[in-house]
Amino acid sequence: MEEECRVLSIQSHVVRGYVGNRAATFPLQVLGFEVDAVNSVQFSNHTGYSHWKGQVLNSDELQELYDGLKLNSVNQYDYVLTVCDPVMGDQRNGEGAMYVPDDLLPVYREKVVPVADIITPNQFEAELLTGRKIHTQEEALEVMDMLHSMGPDTVVITSSDLLSPRGSDYLMALGSQRTRAPDGSMVTQRIRMEMHKVDAVFVGTGDLFAAMLLAWTHKHPNNLKVACEKTVSAMHHVLQRTIKCAKAKSGEGVKPSPAQLELRMVQSKKDIESPEIVVQATVL
Image 1: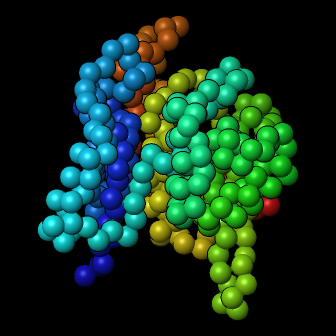
Image 2: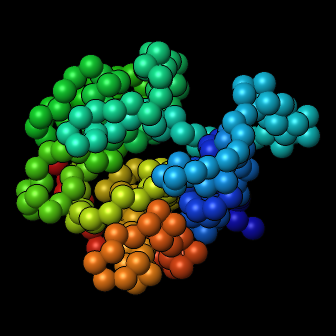
């Protein structure tokens, strides 16, 4: 019997759409993981809509849920997946914008990142964590080394403003993974990926990316290139299916609504489970 791999996913939850645990649980289950989902937030829908209703759990309420698991001795996990991937902010119209209060930055930097094995910041978040601006690929590699020195062995800068070698129609991502060689020395693998930009704003893509990267790095623990190719290729298929369906519903020349742009997750089950590799990673 195949040994089961268990994941504790502590993220937000929405009734409608795919973000947080709704975006992470399905792909992990499709890829063979048992998932216990603790919902830090319970909203009717994500905040990209005009309105939302729901509740936010405080630390005591979250602790109570975990205590229940612990009392039943079912709190043994191989991985913990959280929104501390870290979700702090992003670039908007060329300017960085924080999603969380500024006073949480030192908590991420000093408490969260040092105990993480894998982090998936965007460029803005990587700059916040290190205090270093990124203008070139070389500077991005130096920033990832700084993040390694803080604790994580795998760092993927999921999106950047750097110009891709393939042109302005492509979004560049960079990854770095440290592994221990048989002789005890540390080996670092670095990769670059270019993904064709999609002219739409999606919600939940970061949660989906983090979940799939966790799954594929588990299946390919010493090969960041393969893990990222499968993750990003699956993302490509999900987003292409989503935008195609959204445009069909909105009609010619009409901008799709947030509801129409909800990720087509169930329809993409086969692509998540066994993605055709359409994005190749370059080893640096």
